[in-house]
Length: 71
Image (cartoon, rainbow, N blue to C red):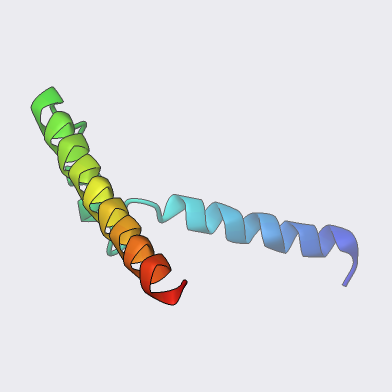
């Protein structure tokens, strides 16, 4: 098999995969997806920010406790 035949097979495989987008098991999810409203976006950012602050604070608290008792 030469390079040209191999490249044709690869191209055909890529085209087949591209044609199946939206028809498989994730197709329904992709079709239902929509852009979030401003309110949804703000709530998501707020919850994510609170989570980051809590996890960061917990990590810093563990660091302080660890550095106090180890040293």
